[in-house]
Image (cartoon, rainbow, N blue to C red; front, side, top):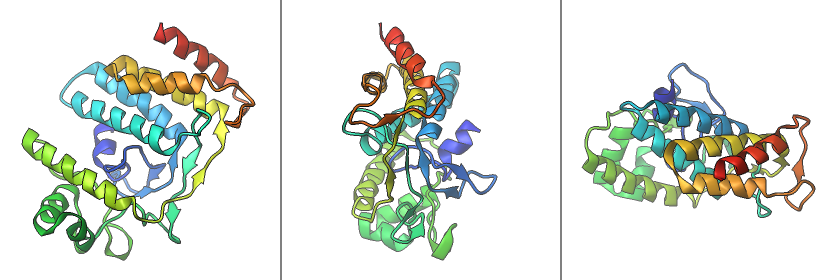
Length: 236
């Protein structure tokens, strides 16, 4: 399951983080909303995958780092906590921020690189989503370090191109329980990989006082205080 999700369209291959759920059994087409509580729990799951070792551990480590970067970049409240979610819709339709056509790949990457990227990530003229667009999913095996470096460069270019699109809206509530889950997942990611940004983000969230300008609201779980204390214990 962890491999299928990480390679499927439920995972954001350009910006990191997971969509809320998939509408099919292949993890291909997601409901594009990205929820904080999903990221938090999946951080813990992929940390466990890394801890078990095996051939997928290296990719799971990348997923953890990319998801931490997503939280830092796109769900961070200026006061230190994390916002609740990104909407599925933008520009009047679901998924338009995330999907691609071969023509859009050519405009961003050039003809040759568009063919290379489209073959690796399943972008076709027929598409796999609405209006002949394609949700990115990794459909070729990861066999060559050189090829992976090249694809990483292409993903960075597409990420920059995607940044010019109309962005999904943000639910900027800072919920104590969801932030507590995030602290737990981030600490698990740090313990599994020693990824310093994960611990730094966990400690930053833990230092947001209730009732601050970060609007850290109770969601009646009572979870946040315990997760705050746990983050500080693990950091010692």
